[in-house]
Image 1: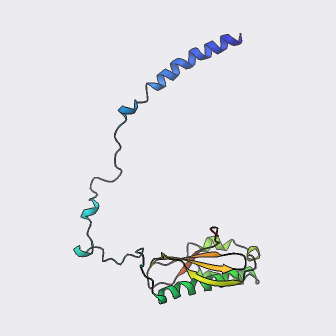
Image 2: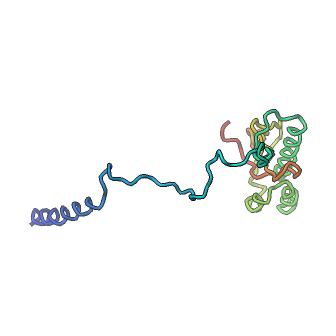
Image 3: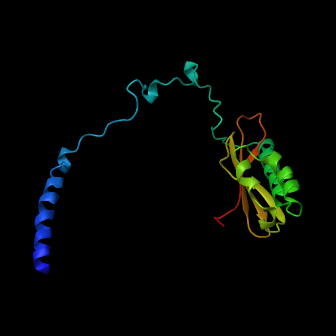
Length: 174
């Protein structure tokens, strides 16, 4: 009886498999990929550049090739002040968060509202060093501590705005 069910199952599965195979085109029959860009999108060569009066080169995400010391100092100062507020865990939650909040980017506030200061290890802060490759809008700073390095990621909208922290995390690369 068992072999009859197996044969009957194969008899039903074979036409179904063959029928589905007919729905799939052969590899040489696949349609050519299409672009998802609108037809009215100009080629990148046609976009105006500085010489055409378009982008004047003051892009907020443009890399700063040789950061000057005043720019580096502002980044490191912002990261150090942020980290000092973060590491000041020996106070009430409200006092801790009130001290940290002014250093946080608005996008980071919800995440740090949930942190319990008691969960932060006792940190002794050492050197503060801006990482290479920062832009006018983004910077990453490494802060050495007694429990290993931490990274403070900073962001701002324009060069006139203050640097605010988006993340404060142990450096997993160390």
